[in-house]
Image (tube, rainbow, N blue to C red):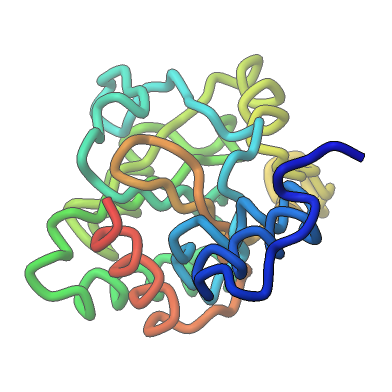
Length: 211
């Protein structure tokens, strides 16, 4: 075999000899990893590079059309729920209000977005009142009934109507985690339901510091 780097002479400088050994024995991914800067360490599930949860185009509680571009330079946390949810949804919103408080001055760079999976009952007026009960800066988005499936599919969100004793007393099963986007509008993290506010705040600080 004719190769200048087939072997490194014993008298080669230590740095060069180490490089040659690395180049010869490591796979390309390992070499790239060895030469790459450290990735941020998150406590939530890292979904960086995901091909889903790219964007939305929905009206908010004031009737304004919103897309992810509207929140450029902010961390965006997206949660799917409904206003008549008895426990999961209010708990998630209370947690995010606490996250914003824990962020202190950086809390102004967090935008929490609630997307209803129950547009039949969740009017813009009701959504506005619901958001105000947690934080006046939180935004609710309301897909039209015929838009809901597309939005849910785009975000890989599960939802299902569960019949009640009357046609209007149904409830909704739905995914309960939160997607967190960086300041460039890219989905980065999935935070499972029940994750403590301090943990989410820590991950958001990491995103802000690396942006």
